[in-house]
Image (tube, rainbow, N blue to C red):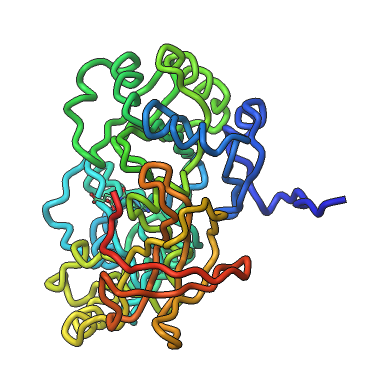
Length: 369
Ligand code: THG
């Protein structure tokens, strides 16, 4: 019998879990101690649904770290090495949260709900512990915790049609990462123009975990005229688009400059921002690695990997490929890599894939598409 996952209360189920099972989910990973669907049995249909249609994803594992209180704004600025003075309620900003050495800890979206109220919509690690410790050690007057919030993503070129039908024309005016607190058939949600794809779309942050099935069905029904179907954060599209997967594309030494997040780091952020001194020094000396794409020579469709493999130039190990997949739009096998700055776009490399195959390829700038 094949091995299987042992259910445990330590791995949390999303409010949309039962709905994804009813939709025929075939695989999960664990992200932020929660089950995250990774497939519904037809990877190509799921890919094209995202590229040409509209797809709905259980991304409740994008858990929220909430802080509320008189010092919430100060805490946000201490945590995020990006100048937040101009941030207004209703905005979301991408943030490179770093440790004191400038190592990237998480790449959340910071949401400002009010002057004294923020959420961090986090990537995979226990940022809540960090935020609690920082708030306490800096003696800040804030409450830090996790609210009852579960994002559901609606992604793809037809997502706008579904959202206009549900919420009216005003959603067209929403800028990227902008959000509104609203409701749908009495279910409280926060609606944001966002999502981990470059195909456009929205995320509905459900604010009542008992209403997961109801919300899923409302979106399913509203999306029916657009042939909406289930999907999940798509490993192929995100490589094509160069979207960062923290913990996958990064390691325990990665700083934001290495993974194309330099534009979200403001070196003139206040001196008491965690990591800012180290980041100034790294910026001054220049990062030692950078993130490049790799186009693999093979025209045959290779297996996708979400695991690292070593990249060589000549006989010399020069970094790692962190994910690869076959791109149906490019009709090429492509990968993301974190490699020495010695390696420049256009140079030839070889890669030892996790399945033991050795392939050759060429480095290139990101994104691919
Ligand atoms: N949505 C929400 N929470 C999340 C994610 C999300 N938490 C986990 C993870 N994803 C956080 N990481 C990212 C990474 C990239 C983006 C969003 C969250 C993203 N990046 C665009 C880019 O890089 O081109 C745009 C950045 C910008 O314009 O500022 O969208 O997806 N709720």
